Length: 441
Image 1 (tube, rainbow, N blue to C red):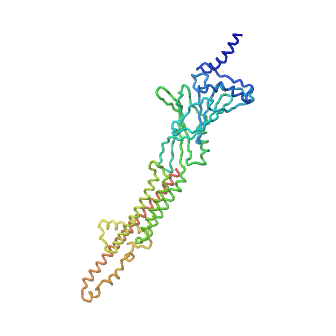
Image 2 (tube, rainbow, N blue to C red):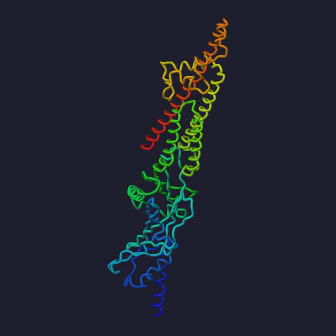
């Protein structure tokens, strides 16, 4: 009786010890008679749950293979085998799968190297265990990771991000990483989930296996390369289209007469409206870097400022021409003749009804027809009657020279309008072409 008592006491102690010692245990099958009845199977698994701090391996010299999978909807799927949890379904009322709290199980310490936020995974998650000891653990998590963005082509940018799965505790001698699904399956599943919502479009997912060496330790890694592209429709409608409309309206303002008093206030109003537009849309732009769209906005603003300055200059020149037109520099006169040559590609300004020499002097405020001016020269008839034809001829030549200078400055104003108008057309055509090419690339 004493020997029998000693034998019964040592057996359970030896069983538990053999499961804990490295390389000393072996796989076994749980006796699950009356398994599944209320309050019974939990006590059967207590011997396994009590050893959750140890890696489940019958031979600690053999590493545990952990298969991982994920979707872009932030679900991490981890699968591994626990050789201590096995049962025969025929003896267990046909049960092939059970769920249990993850706090009762050994969990592999899989983490994402690029993870930058606090893990906000819900507590009290469950894991599924099948009759062969395979454990599946689905972990919903929101990953805020490091991704080196190239926003130069924003909002038509394409980004390449990496997700590196590794362990910070178990080396390659204890744990190896594998794939639960093929990469194309992960990509298809993720694409189907995110195709209907979100700012980004998934292009592709690829993987690479690597080993991380830290001192004398070697860790297994799986690196996923995720290629995503931004959906640009929102930014085109809210940023590019309004900006293009404002620039087009500013270009149409060149059809207003150069001597019009409403041209400069109209351009000032457009410039103020464009600045308000930029302030309102500033939140849609990236907070760092210098994307191409910012360069586009800067060019639009610069064109509008140059156009306003050109309008002010033309208004000043035309006003000066009505009082005392200054002599035109020789180099400017030569350049004007070269630009207005019929062989050159510089036509008249966009105003309708202008002649090749620009606006007629009679259309300028304060400038009258030569004949009318001559007819009203003080003492003109008296000078002719008194026999002073020389003074009359000199006055006529001065008046003709003045009118010629007025015509030259008017022509110069029309040429400046034409050149700036063509610059607007070239800029708008280049912008539209660039948007179409980037959108279709």
